[in-house]
Length: 252
Image 1 (cartoon, rainbow, N blue to C red):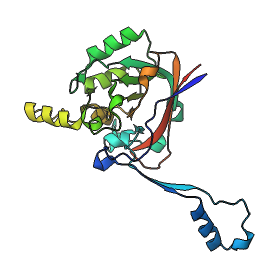
Image 2: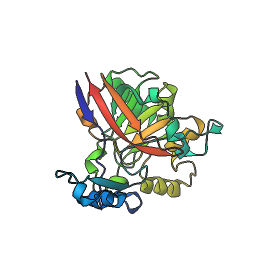
Image 3: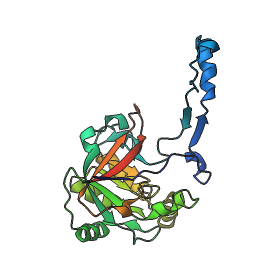
Image 4: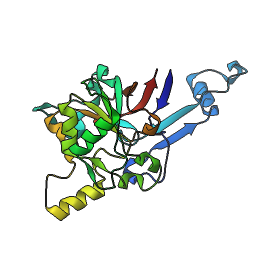
């Protein structure tokens, strides 16, 4: 069995956008000694080999690193019902056969269409079922930890997202900063066309049809098109719109 990590490391990066920066504070072992003393243990009774314990504090937004979005992120309702938060994701949906669709040829700011998805699926030779977890490979994970990462990429169109849902797929992911086109491109296209339906179009599909998608995946180029399993178990943050997840591919 081989396990391939598809997750971005959680660490401070000054090149992340200011609203998504992760902060990590590593506390040295010796700090715990003072805490134990405050709890009432005299120094003379400390075990000779007691160095204290290491501890860490992490501050991050739930969308700041590799994560999975819940329908609540897309809007307060989904399919006319209260939208589920991340703690309500069915765990049986968090593991399943994986399929990689290669869209790495798509140009920046050019949305992924239904025709693109059909061609990528045909090239993969894979079959989609309601258990399949589909991973969209754009290759933009090569920009992780750079200032360009959140501003650069292709992105799923609403129609391409609906195409996956029509085939029973409800868990999907992408190896770039976001599921849609970069914000810059969305805003530019909306302003240029006067079309108020373009902004966040793929996310907003989840207001009509509930689905769950991962963002900021990596290492999809290390996977075959199919024949592996994906496991994505988010932190159980009650009431949250998303949660960080350690996403892995399992090849047996």
